[in-house]
Length: 144
Image 1 (cartoon, rainbow, N blue to C red):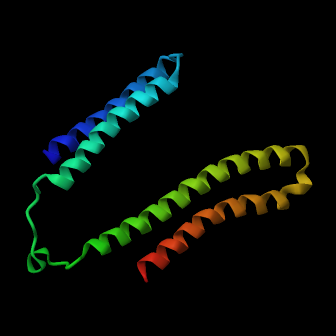
Image 2: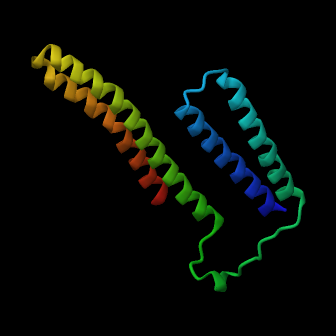
Image 3: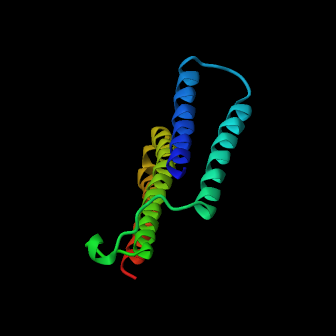
């Protein structure tokens, strides 16, 4: 049952992405909030069904013993690696967004007055520092 619900969630996600790409290419106009609400509600129903099935249903996955797993990783180790990946990924995405806006503004400012190039590089460097903070957090998570 859980695998079927997971496949339904994947189908809703992929269908939403494909429909969005098609609508973007055709320059469709309309109320985007209605389409987003429909997609999120469909995905939410499937996700809620998955959670209820996981809480009250039987498990579908076989249990693996410590000797058979080989690596000996626990659930906490998995969450640790997931947290490190999320902190690095979101920090890098945030830095990309910041550098995109700051960099374009810096290019425009340097075009107007070339003597402020050094000042604009400081702002771009500060925006790139966001990704370094995410990486430092992930290192702290991994080695704690």
